[in-house]
Amino acid sequence: MLDANMKTQLKAYLERLVRPVQITAFADDSAKSREMLALLDDIRSLSDKISVTRGEGDARKPSFMLTSPGHDIRLGFAGLPMGHEFTSLVLALLQVGGHPPKAEQALLDQIKALPGSFRFETYYSLSCQNCPDVVQALNLMAVLNPGIEHVAIDGALFQSEVEARQIMSVPTIFLNGQPFGAGRMGPEEILAKIDTGAATRAAEAISAQAPFDVLVVGGGPAGAAAAVYSARKGIRTGVVAERFGGQVLDTMTIENLISVPHTEGPKLATALETHVREYAVEIMNAQTATKLEEVAGGFRVTLASGAALTAASVILSTGARWRRMGVPGEEQYLNKGVAFCPHCDGPLFKGKRIAVIGGGNSGVEAAIDLAGLVAHVTLIEFDKHLRADEVLQRKLRSLPNVSILTQARTTEVKGDGSRVTGLAYENRANGELVELPLEGIFVQIGLVPNTEWLKGTLTLSPRGEIVTDAHGATSLPGVFAAGDCTTVPYKQIVIAMGEGAKASLAAFDHLIRLPVEKAA
Image (cartoon, rainbow, N blue to C red):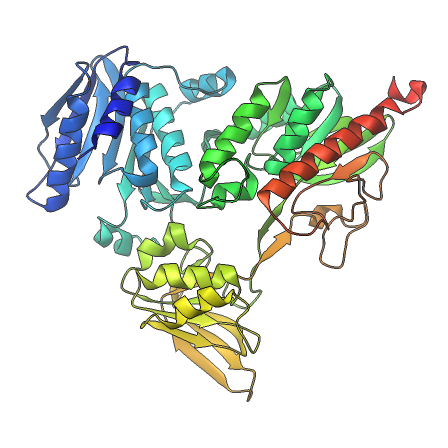
């Protein structure tokens, strides 16, 4: 099942096991069960601390559970955790086998102390780059706390469950049989939902922070670069972020980051955070900024949790998010047929009819990708012509199960109350209203900057971008900005990194030029 190179790498990892790992496999006569058993046999052969037994009962097949003798651990995978989830499997083996996890001690202590009984089920797809964060977070929690159980389920192999539970996006999480959440989550976000006192304690700890010299708001490439450059100056630096990594976490393949021929978004996001943590930077994750105001000695940033931070200077790197259509039914059917990530959610629409909204490169690439999975793709573009590169258009037009509608304005998402059943659009050429029956809609119409909370505080462009000068300075002295939330053209990772570094250097220059009394 595993090639020689993967076996060599995995064997080196498994040498870190400090206690036995017991794998219990549940299989039938299917091809996938045979593949799973072959995978487990390969793993067993690489470490004398791993054993595999066959289980009986009505468990999902194929599936397997991991535990360690003498430890109350209930952690499992239903399906073959390959692709993006192979890392989740390796980490689970290491953690069940006693290898210490890489996480802040305060977080580990919070997980261990959590009272109650929690049975989590996470549905994932092998092509989803967002799913491993959720799977790994819940696996870690299951290893640390005997009251927490987790099984990660490949939705493509258990279609009957996906249909019965009306799962139309991944990752989707169930807790004790009831819907718990959808989309990327880390342990902090999960704990905030099940530990009723976690948010209050986190807010109190944040508010108790001493003032920063530089506070970076946002943890994407721009924010990470800004934090590293600030910390290297020896000044007190903090990062407050909704999710460290930002949009990079949602990027499948990155091949234009100079000196890195190929990487994937989640890998780059992990590398960014690891680099920042090499310095004395205070990272406050899972926090959303809601207000920026001038105060004596600098600025105060208020968070949605009610906490507040002060700093002599601020660097805004809040990034951007998927632009939505803004039509009736869109909000109601988010994650119920309305999706934004074709790589993550595409496998859930296998054999179904879907639409892709947007005729730029992103939309056409999504349509090409999805055409290999679904029964039919309808690409809908508002303008008279597609805007994607000609090479992509030629590829799209060569596909037999793709239709292209131009001069079409989406007017409504149709549904039956629980899932998408169609889409209504206006033919802009003749004004005709048309209803298109389908099961999924992938929206690919660009990005909108995360700057609504800054309106009236500093100058924004008509598109909501923060207006900056050549040094990254905003209209508010002492406040700088970088990345996709600014007016800097060409929203690229490498540009965001450079802009973050530049904004940090500009912030440092601002600080050293403050009058002595104000700086003190």
